[in-house]
Length: 202
Image 1 (cartoon, helix red, strand yellow):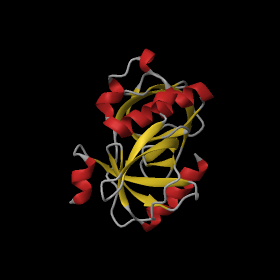
Image 2 (cartoon, one colour; image 1 turned 60 degrees about the horizontal axis):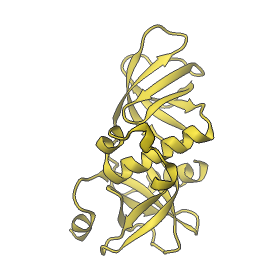
Image 3 (tube, rainbow, N blue to C red; image 1 turned 30 degrees about the vertical axis):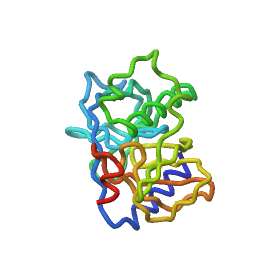
């Protein structure tokens, strides 16, 4: 996630419009504590999650397990960040990482309800390794998912899309930001249920 995360971090410093936060319900169980905490997942990637706690967050470097609605259960280590959002660094293998990336791709394509309705036997990473990229004039391209999080996506493609162009990736509306020359990196701005072409022409 390093290249995507760094590209999106730099894009945040330059963005014209604020992002609408994405919140997904979750529960976390810290091994050294009793009981389960309810959290809001503010960021989800193949490497970890940003979490907003009710009350005092746990100390850093604590082992815990996070249940995210529609995505599954992930073990990790807590981290402290600025503000009221803390993190959980996932301790997962490559198979679990692909499982998560597949579900993130489904979320981008169709929303949380589609992720929640997936059955375990439906999970197949190669089937969801592509997402549609719809440009401002309505032209649509199928692109390979190189990396993805709830803040953005890196798509492998041979088309050239200029920095700053507004696009849809699946049902996520976003802006193209600077990234590697062989990729289109999109910073998500918000989720919309409208048809992409109609929104982009507006």
